[in-house]
Each structure stands twice: as C-alpha cells, then as structure tokens.
Image (cartoon, rainbow, N blue to C red):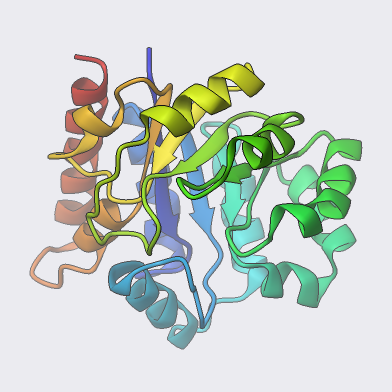
Length: 246
C-alpha cells in the first residue's frame, strides 16, 4: 500500500490544534507526519505554508513547542521534524538531534540543506538512529541522483517540479524515477503540488505522496471552526489515501 505523509505547521492556530490534528490525521490513514518548524523565510514553500509559518511565529512559537507536541504524538504516529536549517543550526544541531531522539522523532526534512553540506548532519543523525531525508529534483543528473540516493534513509523525497510548494506545476518524472530506481532500493515519495485532484496521477510509479499546502489551506480557512477544520483535514486524508491506492 502506498504511503501518505502529511505536513502541518506547529503552533497554528495553536499547540492544542497541532496535537489534535496530528492524531486525527493518523486515524484518517496518514502514515507519517511532517511536523513543521515555523521559520520566517521558508524559501521552498509557497504562499499558503509561508502564511501559516508567519502566523505561528506571531503567536509566539518556540522550538520547545515542537518538542512538547512530539512527546505527545510520536508514540501514535511516526513524526519527522520538517524545517529550514537556520532554526536547527541556531539552537545547535547536536542538541536538536538529542531532543528529537528523546521525544520519539524519527528524523528530519531540511529542504534548504544541499546534499554536499548534508553529509556531516546525516552522519550525526545516523549515529543517533535518526534519518535525514534525501531530496531529488527533476533537474538532477543521473550521476548526481546516484550520489544523493546511495545512502538514502527511510524514503527519498522526490520534488515534483522546480519551484515552490503548492504551485501546481507538472513535469514528466519518468526518467528521474527510473534513475532513482536504478541507484537505490529506498522508497520514493513525491511532494509539491499533491492534493485530492492530483494525488492519483502523481503517485504513479512511486511509493507514497507528501501533502502540505492542501492541509494548511483548511487550517487557514477562518470560516471553519476548530472541529470543522479537523473533520475536513481527515476527509482530505481519506480521499487522498484512497486515490493513491485505487
């Protein structure tokens, strides 16, 4: 069965919602949760996720909030911290690794960390039984894909197009997927632009999908109350899980 990874921004609209949404998404079929660490300049993310990041920061988000949420949810749903290098580096990567390990987080997704610079961080993660997720872009050459994926852990994050999340672009990824399969046995999950309408097509020939902006759009809808947001996020998760496994 193909996997569904869901991204939500920690602390928006508040910490209680983050915890409740994470557990509700697990009930709806989400396999892995990307717990987003808010950052003021999320360069790989589109307007929707950027807005949630900024609102969470305005609400007073602290890294300790992500730790507190993770302690409550990680026994129920596999949890990865997704964030930009600056917050991890600023508080000390070694400390962040230890905190993640202690609260049950299984690894990190850091989209602005180039492969060449990631090797040092990946080693520290591996020493603590954590995974640093590897990214492959449609612009990567066959040779670069071989380098990136040879030691990939947990899953390979295939970026669906060159751009930012949520923009809905489309590219032919068949050659990139073939090159990854030739280089690695690690599962491939595709992200960027995955929603209820695109999930089935994007899931073709890969092992899972990563969905962020579609969930965050529900969270940002001020016409919905707390429980309605949770319910709609659950319904979206169920629809996407069914679509990718149809």
